[in-house]
Structure formats: C-alpha cells, structure tokens
Image (cartoon, rainbow, N blue to C red):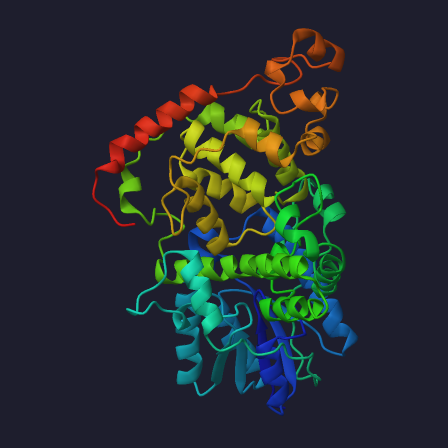
Length: 482
C-alpha cells in the first residue's frame, strides 16, 4: 500500500507542522521517519548538550505519535540512501519535510530533492522554522540586511505570516524496521546530565508549558526583567525553538493573543519579546546570505586581528568558571550545569574572552556549541560575532564590558553570583562582584580565601582593555567589508 513519508529533522512537533499537515492532506497514509545523519552537518555536527536534548525530544515525539497509532521509524544516514531504501521497502510516493537553513544541510537537501524527483518520487519541502524565510526579505536595492532594526521593520511591512495550523488527523501507513533511540548513542556515557534533566523538559508538551507559563507570568515585565539573571525573566524557549518543538508562528500568535487586554507597558514588553524572535530570524538571514559566517568574520579586516599567542591558561579558567570575576564564573557554571546561560551574561562572558583575554571568538563559539542545549548555528554565530565586533549589527569593538559594573548593574544584590559561585556567597552584596577589593577582614569573615578557595582575577581589567584597544588599532586601517 502506497504511503507518504514525513521526514522529521528538527521539527519535533505535531501542531503547526507544515510537512505533517501536507502529508495528512495528501490522502495517503503517513510514515513518520527520523534519519540520524550528523555527518551531513560537516564541521558543525551537534554537540554533547544538543545530543542530550535530541534524545529526549525524539522520545517525546515517538510517544506522541504512538498515542495516535503511528510509529516513528528511526534509521541511520546518509539521509539520501536511507530515504531511497525506505521508499523501496514501502512504496512511498512522496516525501515531505520542513526546511533547515544551515549551508551544509541546504546542499544535502537540494541533492536529495533532485534524486527523489529523478526517481519519480514527489519531494516537497516546507517552512516550519521561521516567520520569514531568508530569501524573502531584501533591502530596497535587493541586497541582504546587515543591521537588525531595518531588517525587522522590513519583516513587519511584509505580509503577515500564516496562522499556525492545528494538529492534523493522521492515518498510519506501511510499517518499516528501524533502530531505537538508544541505539543512536546520543546520551553521554559518563552521566554529567543531571542538571539538564532537572531544568528542562524536552518535547512539544514541555515547550507549550514553558510558553504558557511565560505568557501568564513573565511577558508583561519582560522588557526590564530580561536583563536580570537572578530572576526568571526570559522565556527559556530557545532550545524548544531550535528543535522545532514549538514554532515561531505559534509563539507570535499566542503572544499577540495574550495582549488583547494588556496595558501599554505590557504591550511594550511583549513587542520587545517578539523582537527577540526577530533577532533569531535575523541570524538565519545572515547565515543564509553568508554561508561562511560561523567560521569567518563578516568584517574581513578582523581576519588579521592579533589574538593572544598563548591562550590556553586563560581559556581553561574561562571554561571552568574560574576567572576570578564572579559574574563570568557564575555564567560559565550555569552553562555547564544546565546547558543554558542567561543572555545578558552571555554577552559579559563573551566580552571577557574575546576582548580582555584576546582569545578568538571562534573558540568561544565552539565551546558554546558543545555545551548549550540551544546551540543553533545561526544564533550562536551571530552572538559571538556581535561580541567580537566583526559581524552583522555587531557591538563596536571598543565596547568592552566591565564585568564588575555589569554585575553591579544587572545583579545588584549579587544573588545570581551567590547561587552559582557559593564560595563567595558569604560576602556582603556590595563585595560579591569584586571580592579582591573587599577588606581582608570581610573576606576572612565570609570564608573567602583568594587564590585558594576562589581565584584572583586572571586578567587586569584596565591593562587588558588597553591591550585590546591597541590590537584593534592595528586592524582599523586595513581593508575589509563591514
């Protein structure tokens, strides 16, 4: 009996899933398929934290499909070969999938689409991941945008995205053998993932719960609360978005619906939140138009930046959360334990690494890629090039965050650092962001022994700032884009 294959990739949901909807409307039974093909992503195969999330998200998707009488067939890649084998085994007449936008995957999917069509099989791709696909938004001169604000304004001037579609009614198709999720080997062999399991619920249900909770409790204060790492002021939806457990159309529609009776301040906060969804769109826009963006500075003159000759000691201290700057160490420990870091703190830790330590932004990008549950090639690249001053709509290089002042401003009571850096929790709040400046007696009373149970700062902020600016002066006159 003929069927239609629905090829799940990073769209692990049943609601507002255009590929699934189209397959259901085809009149044929559906065969849900996941093909594990990390090699297709080239140098950017998913990292350890992403693999943890993928394992549990696939479990949730498989359970949801099973409740509806369908099985999720899991195969190993290469994806083109796996699909060809499934078509031969089941007599499938079509394959539907939702588009991905990483350069290596675009190339793979283009080749697969041609191969299927050459063999007489319908191959149809859809948009499930973005409000506005990267090729649909152009400047007046027909080029891509390099700055977020005009990009987002252009998006808002275009036709509104379609409303999210409901979960379709599915009919089971032909059966096929496959491997188990455990066979994919996505979970760590040494189980360091307790903190991830404590903080996250991967899957469509977990995504919807998080969105509902944010709209009930957080969106009205988002504009101010989002910069305070000690409180739960952000949505936490980024990993759910990355794995397609919820889509941006759903988030946009639900947010606008929640504003029906909101006051002006709440409306402004909600618009600020939707602009962050727009920043994610912008990241994909930049990556699509500049495929080497994850590896090469968009502003070419930064290719000649004089980085530190021996970065290893500083890099290890940064990775371990042992820099001696509490707000930085708190963020790095939060990342290691939960697979996530508050966005304001991401900027602070990035600035210290790239500017004060003068370690290439690609090094930080790679560390985040392996440790973030929301590691997204477009967003991760955009964030690190923003910090480095080399990317689209980037912060000027001379904007070097002072971790003391950033901590005092956004974590004024030191609650965030006290939680993640308990060695200094006994200090009074006014000393928590610069314990080396506290009087010796205060440190002694708090049990803080600098250089023993908590490190002294690994760099001198003033001296390293001067060195960074001097390094920037060396490339200012060079030619390059940006």
